[in-house]
Image (cartoon, rainbow, N blue to C red; front, side, top):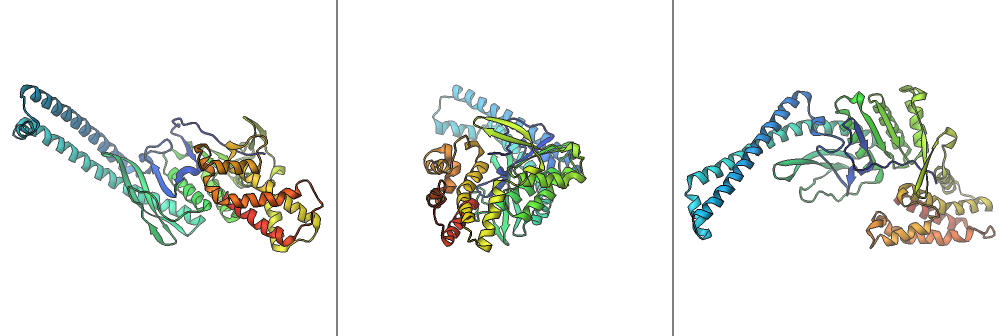
Length: 418
């Protein structure tokens, strides 16, 4: 098993490093935090609005400090009055209603709160104006991949009082707007893996394009391509190539060697051959080694097997040896895609039956919860295992090409869902 992977510890990233991975999308919701490790609100604002934005933040912070000071003063005042007057709660509150000093403190607190809310509205307006530019840029990139999905609107989310820290977007799918509710940020359309990748990558590239000092940025892109759609592959390569011309360095991690080599070939007009380094991470148990990649490594097991199965489905086959080869390729194909999609679970002697066991465990064991989405595929996997086991160590079995065609289609269905 060979794979290219990237693992990032949960550390604060340097401001000139931006990281893309496929986890920008969770539960079919497009959302990101402002001021996260990769980007800040400043990245989205127009340069002419930055001084205004900074001043509003400064003034709002002063109001927050004044409000906090006034609240402490109010609390201390209540404590002193409690000690001075031995009154029941109702009488005590009635007395405070008539106390001018106490009421002045309440009025000040309200004034400071309203001032912060006013700044929130002004800041929100600046962000909305900047986000309109971001939405347009994202859609321009996204529509190169698919015309079916469009970011149509945004909502600013306040997770804490007077603290804006998320932007949640509404997405139109085939022209139908899916509005995201503040309390339940989800919608009922399930995006395909290819759609998710396209939306996530488009938004990332749009965000990067607004970064200050773009030519100094180091961009880490982790597995941007998860679809076997050749058209989207070419568009992904072209989009990352265009970015390469504008940044200091691109670090691209992928499980797809063909994708890696095609990108390397495409970018040669922008950088010199000596600036392109291709390495493969080879896991073995708990350890990983590196080896340099060469173009002779391009076509891997998955590509060869998919090509063979597609030819069989379109043209048929009658030769017994080739039928046997096709039947024997089904199980390794599923094992390979499992290893690619779930590299953290791979170790020596991990077979299709091992992954089936992980799927079963996902119902009750949180450690295997990533496999839960494959519970509906459990019976299909068992059927493929039962069908192929008789061919593993014997070449004497007569293969029914019609039956084999059915199991090839089942295998490809499981493959697509993994």
